[in-house]
Length: 305
Image 1 (tube, rainbow, N blue to C red):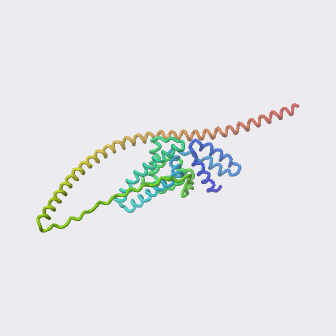
Image 2: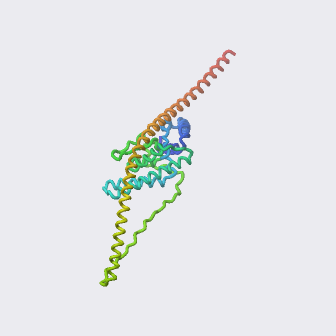
């Protein structure tokens, strides 16, 4: 069995829609049995991906550039953590929140365009998988393969065990075959630099002194106004932070329950795949039994005649 052949076949299978996966896998494994039993056996055991894993696999194929932006940002964050650059890490964390939300939202839209409606719970798992890929280098490589079978979660403390999360672990280091590239151009937002004003030195005459006094008064008024705005902004931030923590707690509970339901759905899907396999084998056995019965009847008729 050639590993490259297995990875290529897996790449083709995990590019399919969820409702096409099981049938295509079984048909290709069956066609390979006479030629390569080992390859057929491994191919036939490839698990159907969860919905969240399938969405991430589609990102790797249809939105490779967007996914690369996510993974590159993750690499930059890991480097900042190693160098203990707090300012850079805070800025990168802000970018991570924005980017993972934007890309997971785009992934949901991509899934819909491909004919699969994705729930909020699945979208949350997609976003968590992207965060895991930004935190863990191994997870990033797994995501690039486009062969995930389940969503990923990383704590950033221990390396992820990817043996059950990717269809062909040996495919680590290989990128999924892109279907099309995103044509969406990134918008650049430039910041306008403040204009600096040079205050001339005071003249010896009274007019210059008066101008300096007016300038000082204006600066004091502006400073007081700025203090009021700052105080108001801080109160607003404190209020929103409290509300954010409250909503985060509520969302965490919803995600936990959604995760339980998602795992239950995956378990049923796995049992369905196994049941389909048993049905296919039973159909083959039944066909063989009918053929044997017919042959026995014909032999009996021949002997009677």
